[in-house]
Length: 80
Image 1 (tube, rainbow, N blue to C red):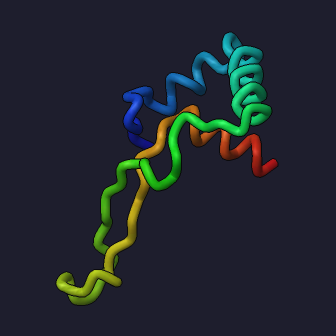
Image 2 (image 1 turned 60 degrees about the horizontal axis):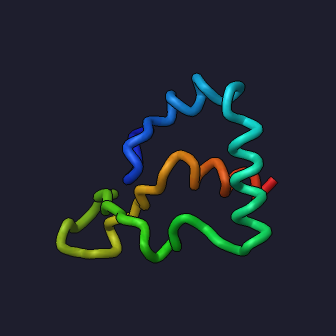
């Protein structure tokens, strides 16, 4: 996995999760209670990745959003 717009690589979060878990939970709780998010999905930068077939056909590409590691973590917590 690569770094998102915040430039934090996923391995960083994995290595420090035990030290910051209570702060992350608190921050996510505050965001959810206030119904706020750090970025809208529409605002996320994205790249397109070629799948196969005719390269001039836009349907042969898939979008990949470049979201921050913390946004991905928040999404996973909300889904669970």
